Amino acid sequence: MSHGPSPRLAESPQLSKGSLLTILGSPSPERGGPADSLPPTPPSGTPSPGPPPALPLPLPLPPPPALLADGDWESREELRLRELEEARARAAQMEKTMRWWSDCTANWREKWSKVRAERNRAREEVRQLRQRLDALTKELAGARRERQEAQGECEARGRELARLRGARGAADRTPDGPEPEPEPEREQEPVRDVGAEAPAGSQELELVESLLKNRPEEPDGCWEARSMGAGVPRSSSGRQERSRLPWEDTATIEEDTSKLTALRLRLDESQKVLLKEREDKLTLSRNIEKLEGELSQWKIKYEELNKTKQEMLKQLSILKEAHQDELGRMSEDLEDELGARSSMDRKMAELRGEMERLQAENAAEWGRRERLETEKLGLERENKKLRAQVGDLEEALARRRRQTASALDCDLRASQAALFEKNKELADLKHVHAKLKKQFQEKVAELAHANRRVEQHEAEVKKLRLRVEELKKELAQAEDEVSTHWGPRVASCLSCGRCGAAGAVRVTVSWDPSAQRGPGEGGGWGRGQRWQRLVGGR
Image (cartoon, rainbow, N blue to C red; front, top):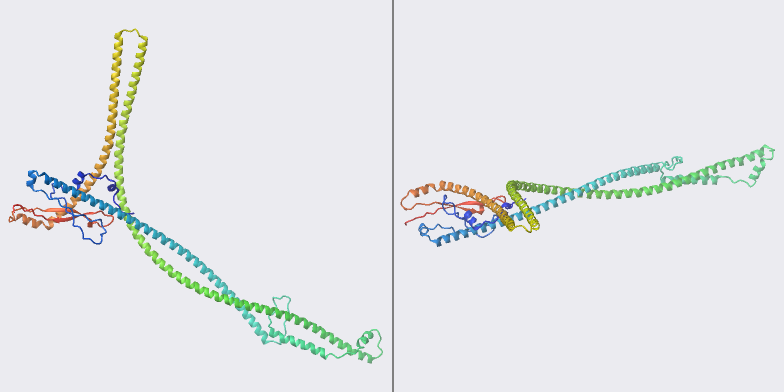
């Protein structure tokens, strides 16, 4: 809210020259002395923040009593011209003051618009930073969660790798031990290493080769003798003894072949298991390398997130401090605005009271106007009645003329005289109606003019009252100061008879632009003391 001039002062009609002379001219004869003396113009330089300084005006000197007694009209005219120039200069000074107030109001509004724009911009920046902080906190929480998952997965892989290394070490420590039986399910097979299974397979191959080499050569007729020995009866015990040895050899060969097939089956299965375990080992090593690379990447990302978090925390602290400073400035501005608003509310209350009074006066004027309108309507109704009577009389006269064409001249003259009288009365009534209508219009115009004059006079009376009150207060203060500071000297001077003249004390009150304290206060009427001694006879 900006402090500006009062709307009543801005909208008040301009004062005439006579009213300006009466307001700003010479003081009342009770107080005596000239009007007031204006302060000197400040030296040129940097412009003061207050309103423009008052211009020094020539003081109207009172004419000597001899000239006034002789009736010197030229001196009186010169005095009047000086008073008129002084009034014009003061009016120009007031106009400059009003212009300065309008400039202050515009500057104040521009300042508040800039402050509001900066406040809105700061709020928008704070809102964006908060959104960015929320997004970063969410990303940080997701990164922490992913890091925990990666750490859990790495720990699981590490345990699995440790288990694989332990199984490999156990297989290296017991290469000749009994091999476990393969189970039907592939997932529950024991983990073997290639270096542990290679000696067992070579030993089985060597065992099979030694069995094949140690087997004796059989004669060609051995199988024929066996096939025929079942159907031919034995003749002697020697033949039985010779045929027992091949049967024992065939039994041992069958046992060896069955063992060899079992060993081959186990060898094939062990080779398949070895291939599968090799593939699993390669995949596990690749997965471990991949997880280690991902873990290093996550560590780097975590460090970057920590750095960004620290930077964001620093920026947030800086923004919080700036926001607190901005809030402090805004609270101070709001307090100033509340003070200005309270003063404007008081002014608005005064204006409302003035408006209510004007509305009451307007209602009274409207009542008068309604009464005049009712009187006008009554006169118009009477005129209509008279016109109707005139029409009836004319119709009756026409009928009489038609009916009594041969009536006497005296009756005709009498009727003509009556008609003439009625016409004369009608003309008189029309004339009276026109006069009343003209008077009504004049009264309405006078009423409007009187309303305007009443408003102007009320505004002037208010200004004069305020001016008189201010002058009374300032004059009382000036008299108090004069009595306190210069009273003893004046008394001694008056009592002294050496000069032969009575000392006169003149107290001047002038417009002091430096008495202004702030944008909410008006210009002050300062006090200036000037002592003048009018010495006569010497």
